Amino acid sequence: MKTSLLQVEGLTVRFGGLTALSNLDFKLGEGDLLGLIGPNGSGKTTCFNAITGLYKKNSGSVLLRNKEITHSSPQNIYRNGITRTFQRLRLAIGLSVFDNLVIGDAMHLNTSIYFNVFRRSNLRADIKNRLEQAEEILAFFNPKLIDNIYQPIGKLSMIDRRRIEVCRALISKPSVLLLDEPSAGMTHEETRDFMTDLMEIKIKTPKLGVILIEHEMNVIERVTDRCIVLSYGKKIAEGDYRDVSTNKDVRAAYLGED
Ligand SMILES: Nc1ncnc2c1ncn2[C@@H]1O[C@H](COP(=O)(O)OP(=O)(O)O)[C@@H](O)[C@H]1O
Ligand SMILES: [Mg+2]
Image: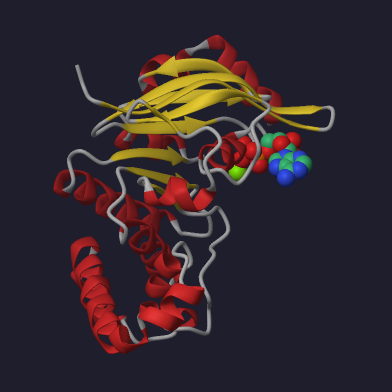
């Protein structure tokens, strides 16, 4: 039996009269790569926002390594080991790769008074540490990225921006990584290369649990071990790609969209 990382039970999120996520249950174990699929508006991003504490849950619970984090703050959830990327990139375009990596992590630390009063003398050491950390994570993800460490994000290709966003999510050494449509805005070729990198990450960090939201079904087929299908906020199927892709409810949900 695999060690449980994430356990979601009865998760429900409503916006006024709309139930964006309805009584969702699933588990993620160490090393799992779980696909989260479903038509537009079916609740995939809402699921990530609820798990990471950005959205309030109307009911249900989220456990990380059997510890309840349902009502924890986004900062605490981040510190406890769940990180994510966003469907629309959230990088500061004018800032360098290094700045973006550092800001991503520092954003989650409560630096103000503590930093100013007690740690100013350590600033130089802190920057050096962070540079080492940034180089380490870039090398880990894809060594070619290090050459661009002082380049502004705006100068990078879409795939490299996505890679940097993943590096930023990995810098805190999370146990759960949530990827929200990383292939959005990438060509087929870039998507293929990106997924190859992702598979490398999985090999190098075999315990990392990943949930991937993705609309390209061939990607889901190639990289996931299991997937969950949402339709109107409800889970309508779960299983390996072959099972869910032939499931009649799933076909109906997708046909309805087209
Ligand atoms: N902050 C919000 N306020 C109001 N409605 C929202 C909000 N976030 C998402 N929704 C609604 O919840 C539903 C699910 O959205 P979302 O989770 O973004 O879908 P997906 O990521 O599967 O495309 C949609 O109907 C969307 O309009
Ligand atoms: Mg979405």
